[in-house]
Image: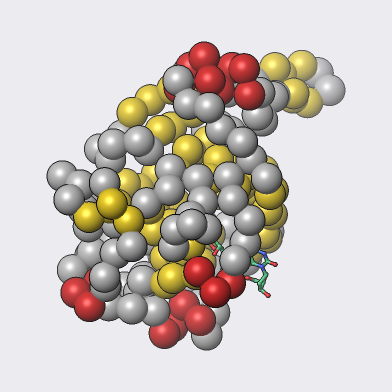
Length: 183
Ligand SMILES: Cc1cn([C@H]2C[C@H](O)[C@@H](COP(=O)(O)OP(=O)(O)O[C@H]3O[C@H](C)C(=O)[C@H](O)[C@H]3O)O2)c(=O)[nH]c1=O
């Protein structure tokens, strides 16, 4: 597995080995020993999530506040997304900056998003299946949402007229946001 650093400290792109043959393909989507060897991180995932999205669906920007903060190991099983990670750790040199990457079910790149990030994605195809492992359980009372189209964050999601949940239409503006995360 190849591990690539990004413009945000702690956010990593992982490129798993994909074994293709005449039947199709095989890959290890997570191996704790390999993950620790290649990233130096000891992680304990407690919840796996999966969502399917039509083209132009946008989910985000979401986070859970401590002590319910979540690290996420993200992959796209089929379809493709533009994935966005925003650094919301106070005092971080990249506070308010974002990392953007296209993930798809063909190249099989994955993304490690540590706690302290707001996360979201835009689906670029119909029937996009998004799967991710979380280091902490879902806790609705700890959920936070920052507006996807916040002018200060100035994120290009790669789509027009996104399909958005009611919750995501009422997120916080970044200028009013009081981060619960220390760097
Ligand atoms: C996240 C979550 C949701 N739910 C229930 C709550 C709702 O009834 C339904 C849909 O939830 P929501 O609209 O919050 O789903 P997404 O918009 O895909 O949320 C995710 O979007 C971005 C991409 C993220 O990174 C977060 O992990 C997560 O917030 O599933 C659960 O039961 N467990 C969960 O862990």
